[in-house]
Image (cartoon, rainbow, N blue to C red):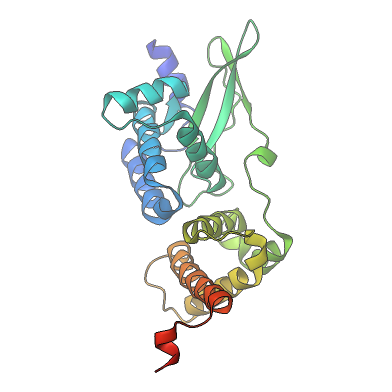
Length: 246
């Protein structure tokens, strides 16, 4: 890759220094790591390594990143890598942009890491031409999941805390729900999820949260879902005989 290309790709970075990039990525990993499976975390780490030369801008094809992961002894499948990308976009960790050849047709994508406390400054304006390619941002409709209106309404009073708060919280709810391996749809448990969120807000207002709202919400919801699953099993199968005799 020519030096001029490197400079142009770095212009897309949302970070001023490599140190800032590494600190922000550490925060993402600390607070959202539970949203990814072990294999997806390997894929995310490979994306991070690929982005280091351009200060948080990964310029590579998925195939090349998969090959690099395999060479390092941490092979993952393409489907796993793509699931990681979807989750990372939902959580606001990255934005993705297609590049288009001057002769027509898509080329590789560009993955731009975002600050943990991203706001309206989330990414640079993608108006700088990249030699023979131009960048087209992906529609936000393809980036954000469909968050139930009831959940959006419950989180709306706190949306000023951080952009896409409801999207990030709902992604965490989906990760918690998946971990508990329920057989029905997550929407059936929406009242419980909202109660967990309100409990987190109450704890936050009382200054009893030592970590972050995201990690606390994950732990709170996981506990409530585990309790709900035990109730479902108890109602279906009844109490164990040894317990009824006590």
